[in-house]
Structures are given as structure tokens and as C-alpha cells.
Amino acid sequence: MSVEGAGLIRGFIETGRNLVGSYVDPRRWVTVQYPEERRATPENSRVYPFLVYDGADPEEGLRCVSCKICEKECPPQCIYIVPAQDERGRPRKHPAIFDIDISVCMSCQICVEVCPFDSIKMDQAYAWDREDRFGGLLLHKADLARPNRYYRELHPAEARVVDEHLARERELRESGVRAAVRASLPGSGEPGGGT
Amino acid sequence: MNMEGILALTGWGGLRWVGPVELFERGPVWLRDWAVGWLPEGAKVWAEGLIPAVAVLAVFGLLFGLATVAERKLLGRIQNRPGPNRVGPYGWLQFAADGVKMLTKEDVVPRSADRVLHFLAPIVMLAPVALSLAVIPYGRDLVAADPRCGLLFFFAVGSAAEVAAFMAGWSSRNKYSLLGAMRAIAQMISYELPLVLSALTVVMMAGSLSLVEIVEAQSGYWWGVIPRWHVMTPWGLAGLLLFMAAAAAASNRAPFDLPEGESEIIGGFMTEYSGFKYAIFFMGEYFGMFAVSGLAVTLFLGGWQAPLAVLEAAPSYGWFFLKLGVMIAWFIWVRGTLPRLRVDHLLNFGWKYLLPLGALNLLVAMVWRGLGGWAFPGAGAVRWLACLAMIGLPAILWGRLLMRSRGWGPRVYRYAS
Image (cartoon, rainbow over all chains, first blue to last red; front, top):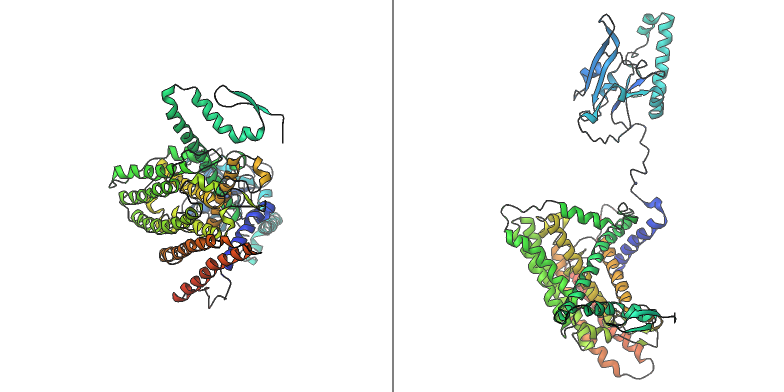
């Protein structure tokens, strides 16, 4: 049989060691001092969507063609798109308005899955504290646009696949045999997403 | 010693040179006499009573604030967290922020509550505990009141907390509150007995109920090194352990915090309290912890006596508050380590274990006194060991017997290990 109180003393030693140890060795800490110190998010983490643009101009470089597929597929219907029009009133392949209400968004990533143009991707920025809980959380086109560089930083592996795919597409388009080859490339209508 | 001397006011009008030792030791008393000296003759007697009361409340009020922060910081460290570290230097002003928060919160009273009792309960909780702080000697001449029956006063007044807990639980009209209140009554009354018994041992040996005299009975040193505190004797050591176990229960501290039981009965008798009333309860609880810690220091740890003759230069109240701090740290450590007991375990532990051992300890103290006449070489050691065995062996054997009769023992996890 064990000695009386041995278990108690072991417990006290354990907590005492924590007490002293957490002063000596900050690596023992199980908490993060949040605003000053932030843990890196895992590569596959996702919060809210953003729009990818190529080149330097966040307005003209947008990949979005305002096809409205994401708007239709979005389960909580937090996306609102109005296509741009040219001077003669015909729709351009460009959004005039692209809003996402992130107070409604449920981070399901369905918009990313359905986008045929790789123009909408998931962001990892989670600190969306705003003074105004309605207007402040309604993100407009300018708030959403991020360069492709940013996407590469967030999801390096995924971005490489998407970049390769887009490059191949562009090559084919320029060589004029796009239609012929498209049939021989199964699944190329659903590029990249999720890999 | 710095013999330069410091000019100090000694009493009303008298000026003379005193050393820093005397300045710090007598300073608080001089300050009181100086303040009283300003007043007209009729007001002096009131001021002499009021000034110590205000001083005690101010010191313990501040200590309450610091203790809440210290508790949260140490508990955090025990769980490998930093604890509160935002408000003020290293978070030590957290209590001020908490106080403002408590003051500005809405004071919710349930519609069917007994409003008068609901309002009175926190006051009834805090007032007696604050009263019991009056009889504890904090320094050589620092005691707010020294009645001849100081210890009796302490326990008599302190037991009003049970009434307050039940008032709170009953007036809230809430089942959780009532459950908590009934637990509180059962627990506090059960543990008052071993608490008083272990204090009684000291009364018997010191021959006085006055806490000032009990401290003075512990002055001096064995062979000039070991202080003659009661804890240095077998009955004192056992008494301190019994006292601390009972004191934790009597002041609703972990691991005996069943009346609150945040995880089971969501705050117990404090469930329906919010805002500053809750803060008052909280304060009463901490004051209770200070009071029993102070009493433990007074009864067993030599009160304001220094541990070594050389260290007597430091002010006596410094020693008292150092010891008090150690006791508070101990309570916090216990809270961070031990899980909460079950109600029946708690009552069994109180009635079947602590109470018989407390009574036995009384006997051991008598034997200790009886064996004091031995004069052969090594008599001291033999007397010490004999008395230790007299309380230690029954403690172990009785504990084993109880464990076996209830089928308790080290827990075996058949499928996990």
C-alpha cells in the first residue's frame, strides 16, 4: 500500500513545478498573448473569400467575369454581383459591383469550388473586428481584391496548380486550338480547386 | 544598525531622536496618537476606536484587491498560463478594473425574491468577518481590540457567515441557491467543530483566550535558534494541519468550495447575485480567508514574532503580513491543485476524521505538558517523538481503517492502464 499523502504531495509538486516552470521557461505557456503575438494559420485554414487579380491594377486585373455562378450557388446568399456595362449598354465580362456580406458568409468555400475562372479564393485573415457590424462587414470589390501574389503566399501548393492550369489555358487560347484540345482535357472546366 | 537616528514625532508634541527600528515598529501607533491629538477631548475616545477600524479595513481592502489578482496569477501559472497581465504593471491593477466593472453592472434581483433578505445577506456576510479581523494582533502594539475573550469573539462573530449564506440562498428563490445554502450550512457547521477544537488546544497550552497573550506565549527561542512557536511542537504541527484543513472548509475555499460549486450548482447561494452585491460576497469570502489565515498565524506560527532573534529588527507587523502572505499563497496553491470533494466525502472527512483527531490532539497537548518535567539527557527528543507518534500513528491507522470500511482506496482504472 502506498504511503499516506504520497499522491497529494505528488500533485503539489506537479502544480508547483508548473508554477515555477512557467516563470523560467515561457515555452511552457499554453496560451498566446493575442494582439501582440499571433500564431501562423495552417495552410488549409479558411475564413472568408477574396477576389484574385493579375497584374498591378486591382480593378482591371480582376479575373472575375461576373458570371454570377458563385452568387447563385452561395448557400446563405451573401454574394451580390452587378455586371459592368460598356458605353453601349452591353454587359462586359467584369463586375461593376461585387459585394460579400461576411456577417452572413459561412465560410463553406462553395463559391471557390464552382468558380470556373479561379477568380475567388478563401482568405485566412480572421481579425474582422469592426465598429459597424452592418456596413463594416459588407466588403466591396476594392476590399476583396487581392493580387495573385497574395494567393500564392496563402496556399502555395494550390496556387501552383492553378497557375499552371491558367498558363496552359492561355497558351492554348493563343495557339488557336483551344476548342479541339478542350475535349481531350477532362475536368479542365473545373480547374484547380481544392487540390 | 543605523544609529544616525531619525527625527520623529513621539506622541503629541514630544520630539526626540529615534532609530529606524523604533520608527518603523512604533510608527503606526505614533501616527494614531498624533492624529487623535488634534481632536477635541470628547471625540478622542471615538477616534481611538475608529482609526484602527478604518486602518484595518483599508489594509485588508487593499489586500483583498491584491489577493484576487495574485490568486488569478498564481492559478494561471499553475496551469501554465500568464494570468491577468494587461491592467497596470504586470496586471497588478486588475482589481481596480474589476471593481469598476462590478460597480457599473446592473443589480438584478429576481422577481419572486425576498428583496429585504436578498439585500441584507451580503452585508451580513461581510460585517462579522470584518469584525473578526479586529481581535487579531498584527504587530507588537497593533491590535484594534484586545478583549480577554478574543478567540471566543472571533468564532462567535465568524459563525454569522452561515446565517448570511442561508439568507442569501433562501431569499433568492432559486433551487441552486438553496442547494448551495444548505451545503454551506452543513459544511460550515461541521467544520467549525474541528476548527474550534484545534484552536482550543492552543488556548489550553497558552492559558488564555486573548490572542495578544497567545502570541506573547510563543516568544523566545529554544537554544536561541528555534522559535518557540506552537507549530514547532507535535501537537502544534498536528493542530496547524487540522486547523488549515478545517479553515479551508469554514471559509468555503477549494477543495471544500461546494457551497459555490461553479461547475455543478453555478455559484450556489451567490447564483442570483450580480454587480456590487456579488463583489461584497466575494470580499466577505476573502476577508474570511484572511481572518482564518491570520488566526492560524496567531495561534500556531507565532503571530508577529520574528523567526530569528537577529531578524527582530524588522517591524513586527512586517513579519505578521509575511506569514499571512505565505498562508494565502498556500490556500491558492491548494486551490490550484486539489479537485473539489463530494458532499458525503466532505462530511465524512469532517465528522469522522478531523473531529476525532482534533479531540486526540487535545489529549496529546496534555501529555506534552505532562512530560515537560522529564530531565534525563535527550528527554526533549523523546518527548517530541512520543507525542508525534501519539497523534501521527492514530492519524494514519484511523485513515486506513476508514478507507477500508468504506471500500475506498487508490483508484484502479481496469481498462485504461
